[in-house]
Length: 319
Image (cartoon, rainbow, N blue to C red):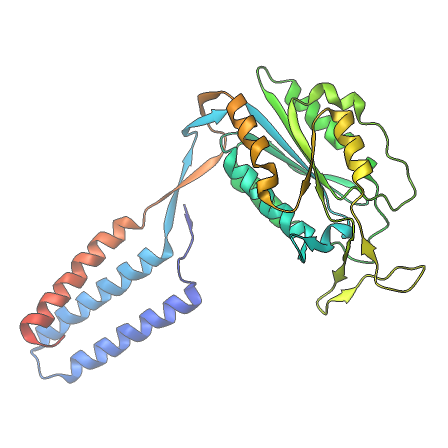
């Protein structure tokens, strides 16, 4: 059982307590028989408690629910080097802002699939192995933050290779599964390394795309809470990150998947629709935990109690 308050508790609790205290003070100041005052206090206390429980939004855990599943393993591999925070997505937004928005839409559109997530900068890290729990993957995306400027050591697209191979092999070991890959990067290599061939991994990928973020004119990068700009160490001027479509097209060619330049989610809509149409559905037990709202258990009696108060107010002209 978990709670997801609709109104934060630090606001809801004081407000409800103030209402309760003011009502009790008001009712005891009136010239009414004691039993009516006590009944009034009981009613308002029940209303406040029910309102608190409704706002608390208590949710029950559900395990092994029967769900409609797609025969897809969808793997995101995301470049998290500092250039992915360059401000040229859809105009002036950070590339990573676009990545997280687009990835969330892909997850929603391909709901029922297994999803995995790898991030890479100076090193590669599997943030989420393949799982049916979509919220876990979305939460993993939300943990991706701009790297410390002192940690950044240049970009290499080769860093993710071993983890990518590992999860692709894991997916291919399953029967009757399609492996979908979204390799997300601006294509920049700034550590003087050469892009290795990804051709050997092509046999493990059924569909997907290399998603390129950035523009040819490029974007500046800011870091820290004061919006300091990343500087080019050679010129001392603002560094500008530009998309390298040559590398992106080579990756797409090696993996035999599409290359799509992303500046809006609509750019990939056709591919997502094609993947959905090519998938099959089965009814399976989900290995993820789902949650069921129980607030209506408290909302219905709360409405009933409020109706009683309204009737009493209409009849007596006062609370």
